[in-house]
Image 1 (cartoon, helix red, strand yellow):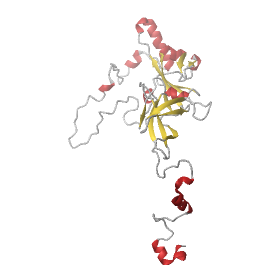
Image 2 (cartoon, helix red, strand yellow):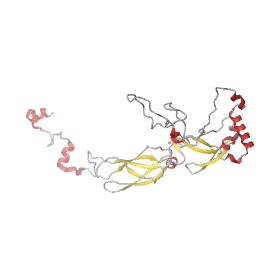
Image 3 (cartoon, helix red, strand yellow):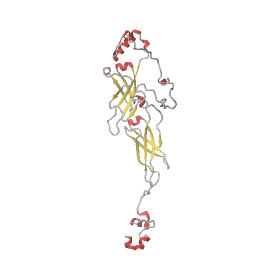
Image 4 (cartoon, helix red, strand yellow):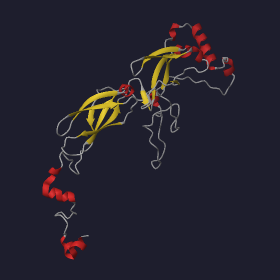
Length: 312
């Protein structure tokens, strides 16, 4: 120890210590007399490290389905740099793609990473959730009753024909808002070749609007067939008219936006009333019922624009 070799005075005077107050090693003595030339090659500056650079990279749903390889030029303080970005099939919105060591504009500093955050643009046909896809399909009334074949273009460009046989209609007819599923026709599962999610198809059935092409007898026949299809009992008018408590009222065309306008406040100023102006009319679930339908409006919409890469 220092005390054994130099005594108390040596300990207080810092014998065996360098001018910075740190213990002197053999390597320190070597650098003191001979400099740093004993080792060749550049060295990293201790404590210096590049900061990671984050960018948002806009991609399409097709890019995420098919995968993507792209060269992108990023801005650095010294000069712009071109990097190569690879996106796996089945990648998802919000996923990070990390390019390690690509930030290296400072000499002798530890490189930083370039991090791309994928931002998927809305698609005009498909909406994604997890590895599943969803779409909405409009069909005519006769297609809903008799079955149909409909060809769509998938995200990889191939044509896919979706078929519903008329024999299936007797057990599970298609009505407005119902959903059919095509197994393994969704997004590819990232990292699992050959594995796919499902495709959900929600239907909107268009009712015939031009009944003037039918004569009165044909309309009556159509009405009788439709009543039979839904299992309604056809009763004579005389049966309803004998019930004095039964009342028949006529429905007229209305607007959902008018719901709640027939209101005259009768409460005192001290009473509290919850504001409901911004609560939309829900004819199916009511207010506060927790009803949530499987509708395309929850899938998203369509937006355009070119692919952009901007720093976050």
